[in-house]
Amino acid sequence: QVQLVESGGGLVQAGGSLRLSCAASGRTESTYAMSWFRQAPGKEREFVAGISWIGGSTFYADSAKGRFTISRDNARNTLYLQMNSRKPEDTAVYSCAVKLGSGYEYDYWGQGTQVTVST
Image 1 (spheres, rainbow, N blue to C red):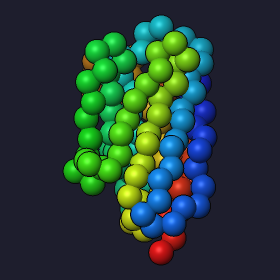
Image 2 (cartoon, one colour):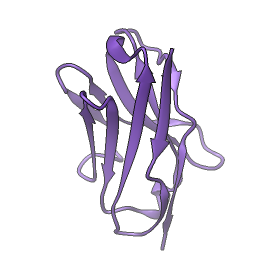
Image 3 (cartoon, rainbow, N blue to C red):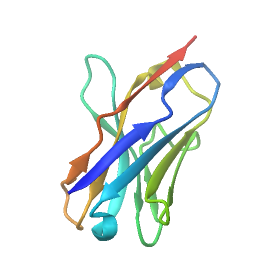
């Protein structure tokens, strides 16, 4: 099993910055990729950004391109999401997830951290 714990959420003013962290523990040696998702009130969960664990290739949703940066620290088994130029529509619960293989499904999810962007 893999345990994921997010941190770094909170209240930020529009235009501000915030960095989220996701600490992974357990059987992390098989990590293939990790991603950030978010779910706003009344909306479905959506993909934000992903990164391959070995090569470091990154992928972003259109809403995140140019404003968010995903990164990882393999030695610390930690995933990050640097969010700049925040907008009120970025308000959501942000969760990290891990894939242990190249399939489509994610194997483990964190509980999420609330991010609120005020105007």
